[in-house]
Length: 258
Image 1 (cartoon, helix red, strand yellow):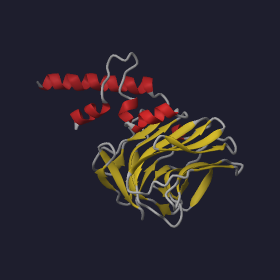
Image 2 (cartoon, helix red, strand yellow):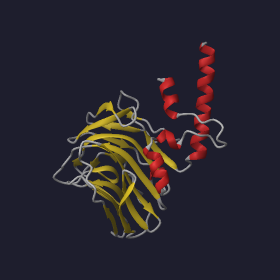
Image 3 (cartoon, rainbow, N blue to C red):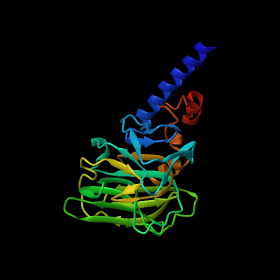
Image 4 (cartoon, rainbow, N blue to C red):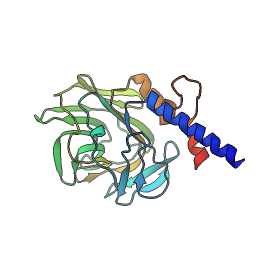
């Protein structure tokens, strides 16, 4: 029996690897927060962009399985700088978040280019405004800004899917699968190109309280249909291998190896 289970897990693991490479070659980071313990937040893509917690964020129930709760005081996740997190073409940031926060000054859900009390351009931020709205904020080396200010407040203590992207000559925000903001790109650059880390739930010296789950970053602009699919869980985008013959559920695999 043990031999059969082991062989099954090997086959499923190989199927999963094939699905990743074929279905989402543009996935440069995905953090599922399903570890449930410890201070390492693993990147489940092939890029190895693992993060480490700072402060004392808590492992809690997430949108899918486990998530991570941040206190808004000093909790964050820090992922070392990598070329895979720097973009001179289109890219997409996506996250599930549950928050009631009304901070006096805007923190950020996802930040690349700000850390400690300094910044370096060209940066990208998935900004959280005091009223609970979301901004996708880019600034290039020439100090040209691209600021897509959403209008939908998400600070109601419910789960919301938040997406920010650079799509051609536009910068966009989507909330729960619906476009919430779109502005012209202020200026092209390689956004995120710096030695600074990627950080979750902090901007500058400001921290955001709430729970997050399934952070995903793609080096392309997702289509609306892809965003809707992503809202069903990362597993829905990674569940089928190239020839559609092994439709293996990521969730089933995760449950089988816990």
